[in-house]
Image (cartoon, rainbow, N blue to C red; front, top):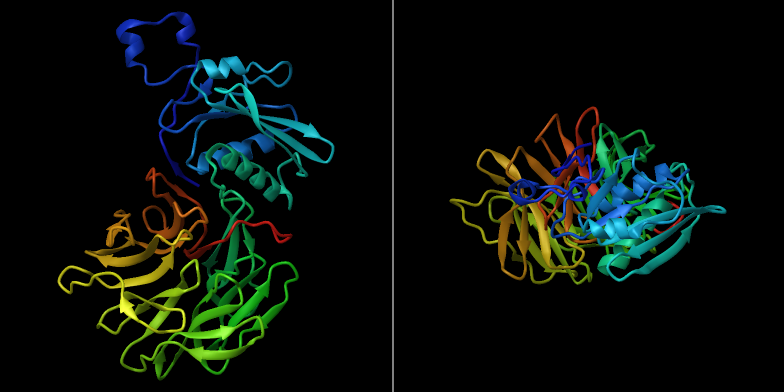
Length: 432
């Protein structure tokens, strides 16, 4: 995996040597035996503790990938493993926070030290494996998220996973690139994965012979159900759950065209058609707004694929993104941000496809990418990170972009293309 961010190797205690004048002014880094550069983000350090090195590295990486901190990485040769904490040392070099990890019976205790306020801002114990592996690894991610929340007031996204397609199967991976697992077990070709709002179930299309029904799969029990209205021939494309998890939208594709339908998946009944394009226009890729009152979707009714919005019952269908036939290429695969303020999609621009974001506040669509071919965006629960597939390096892999810092990192490194990512909600149940 690749993370694009400047890194700085710190070797010695420069300031303690009394360097001053032009030479000191030219120093971009403080040389402490740690990797850290003061900046707009608060500096944080995860202190080393004997027996908890694996946990420390996971927390360190989670905090780094949150894009909320500048993480100071301690060299093993200078990391104190026991004895009295010297919090004043880290405060002296501009760090704002220090995370202390301690082994306890059955797990780990974390203390978050506010170096500026000289207080313990968070003290929690979690039942996790000190080796940092196995099913309890997600508990370490939750610990990291609690640290993010304590500092920023906003929940973190470490305790999340991503579904995606590789080959004929649906795969799942932790948000930090670990725990790659095959999820789909059927004999058909699986496509278009989607998460239930509680993270306990997923849905996907499974192409079998000449039909592609939608499968509901429970991640806890492994049980599978076929969604009503999706197995009568043709392909049932692009499933998506309603925010309350009771309904699902999908796009059945038949000889008569592709249109969006709704089905009650709580009672497993009651299929209703929401769009009527017939052979004149295709309507697909529906995406609920976070409040469940509106739906964004892709339609060819203008002659080329463009992004539209309608009420959840199919009323008031209208174009969302302004269309200019001379300069605006076809647009595909809209996804609503969890905060409801933006819709991401991909669009044909010049010789490639790029990730776009439409902002409801400004009424404008902005390109976020320019390198390679970039498609299939999906939002993280924090509404500031997007995952998408890209050809910017070897093959087609999944990349994560932080919209605030513009930092980008590679998540997957698969043989063959990784595509159709779907970022999970924050995971709290036994599946995680």
